[in-house]
Length: 439
Ligand code: 5AD
Ligand code: SF4
Image (cartoon, rainbow, N blue to C red):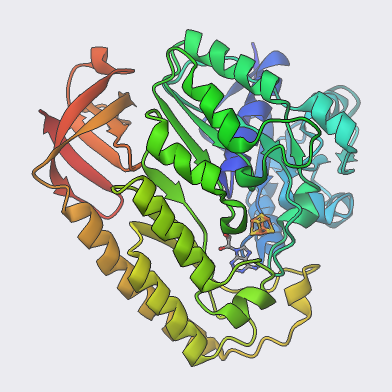
């Protein structure tokens, strides 16, 4: 009988992709994935440290599995991802029933760690950040494409050091994967039925800039456009300072590029943007938004915003509200600032009163909720192209797919439509999805 593993993934898309790789590696070892931890022989947490108190939460999560481990001492328990990277080997000392720890550059080491735990009852940690050549060599090549949409990692790491952000500390320096390899992977995915690819990286806009003779990100998109079988292209995440005119123009001349861009602004005050080390002013950001809308009038923008960065005053917060009002985002992820140990901003005195911070957060959410409603409710009554991704989890004969703007649409239809693009009339709007019917 094959051994069973249970994997929980926290955080960003980068982690989702890392988890796919973890699943591939464990399957090669003969493990099968299960949906609940109770029967598993191996339990793994793929962690994220972007949010507040992430480390403490991971230790809390691990505690949930202690009774299972007490009942079945053979059970293997492991932690990977950004918290593992940050905490390193000391996790093994802190949690006596933890068997293995693997960092963000060490997913390839997982099979060995698992085998050591399985066969020798050996506990182990692999959390060193690797040099550039090794990382390029180990860049995950994922060529199995059983789904309609796939993420393709084009770069890893980040060199931007936004003052609040832990990512450069736990994911290491920026490395771009050779474009030839990326295109080979996308061609292979297309042959296997993948119709949409999302090019993924911490800041895809700076793709290739630091590699001699490499294509620009815009040029890479141009090549992806030429791949037969691929119908839609998306990319994430973009740093506004690196959003070039060449890239903006892609939205007007690449017909496969979807009309959605996630463009994190973080804040609307120039003083705070500078303290965040973002490298642009509100005016420069708005100018890029203007150019995007010229290139692609129906483009929809989403963003990330941090409320209560150290030193943020009421006036500065209002500038954020003004900017959010002016751009009219289709959606926004809003965060309460929290100091991440090891980052530059963690050294700044946290001057914003907790109650004020919470109140500002609610005001921002209220404004953005109205923006959301205005954007998505306006779709009701019209038909749009939807790439059908699969059958709904509910198993009620419903299909789901997305419009060009990245919004999930659920509608009734035969399973034979999966992988095809169909016109769907939007009939109802919900907070995070829409309901429709085949038009
Ligand atoms: N506090 C609050 N939000 C943060 N983010 C990153 N670091 C922090 C922090 N220390 C948010 C940013 C980023 C998103 C992924 O998480 O908005 O774009
Ligand atoms: Fe973090 Fe800034 Fe890099 Fe994004 S660009 S991962 S916010 S440091």
